[in-house]
Length: 292
Length: 322
Image (cartoon, rainbow over all chains, first blue to last red):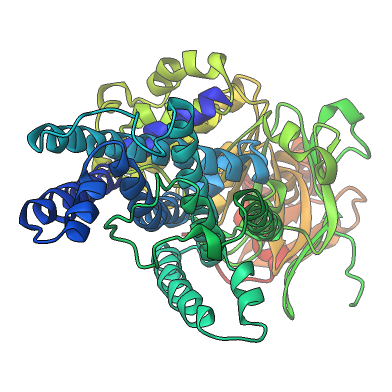
């Protein structure tokens, strides 16, 4: 499996896409720290705006803003990466080449998934590291102490847990893009599908939040609502922050418990994987379906 | 569904020992909606032989190969590779097979060597160590570090063969390997296949080119409209088309004499020449029989059989070789 993963990474790292996605993520974290945080704090006229800005750029609060935005845009960008990694194999016809060499179909999909997951993790963590570095720089410029020891501040273990929660929140969307691409054999379908789903779901959650009857139950079953529950567990103290994600600020009191949310997300992931693997297993791969 | 007649076999030994058969199909079929692309294919490829799977375009050759390699799911029947049932042991069996399939594909951004590294990863260290060897075998050593997208069609085909040979497979499956090659490339590729065959490797090669199959194959199976029409050793099929061509002093009398010989299968007149379907080694006997009746030969020469004649005979096609 190690050699297969190494081969998978060799394929992906020779392409431009991962580097472009990394640059987009770096641009995103820069916007959060400098525009959404430091600039707003510098120009603030009142205490509320000043606190909002501070909790966006200053460490350790910045971690929450970075992870919140990172989860939203990370889902989209990882979706693009996964869709591209899968669909190009169809376009180039190399999927057939792998299978005629005795690689089982499930093994093929698993390697593809693990390769994309590994690369995504590297890109996202590198972008987060850049974001944290910018946050530390901005904190120093604003004469803010750099410490985890703030009211409601996380321990190092909780910081790791927060990163894992945000990463876990990306997983169902990545698997959705993966499934859409395997089924449609098209990067465009995978990318468009995940974009429409992310934005559409955010709108739906907002609408359902304002309705009575069965609306709250439906909302509780949606991926985005449960992801918000995970992200709410990351929030440090009572403070809000600026984020560039198309969703409401996650308030824990309106959301399911993080453990329940994690379970719902796990069920979605399992269902998406099962459907994708089952379809790929039964699919005919003639020349017209990926023979180059 | 109507039951098709079993394919004719031209001199195939009744049953090869199980260990001697590398590939065998049992009623392998593929249906796309109402169209039957492959109809109960039963064929047998024996160890160390080069088997040509011959048929016009659209005959079902690529479908059959895709079924053998697990890319398509059969609508009926199954295959055995090395005695392993493909329904249950396909991945294990495919690890002993090297294949060049139609629409051969590569990672265009990677070099030839990197492409081979990707495929070698599926087989382990031994395949990785063979990369230089197979590059040398197909004559790509000097271009190994160039990106594949800069390769010519012939170079891509050779890279495909190198990839198929990486793990030193027992069986090589080649689907129309010379498609898209110029005449020099085709010849080069055929020589390579012949060389592999001489080295004792079993090769299953599909082609719509009669000349190609005749030149490189030991056995041939002829397929048309999804059905195997016949199969057998090429030499035997060619022998079936052999004849003795002669010119005699009295044609009518000669025909009567020749038809009286029980080992003469047929006599036909072509202008003033006679075409006698009889074993070549009995030419002297034939000459003596005619001389005893005061009929003398002015010319006698053997006429070679051709796979084209045989192909046209079994398929009813007008012409198929390119």
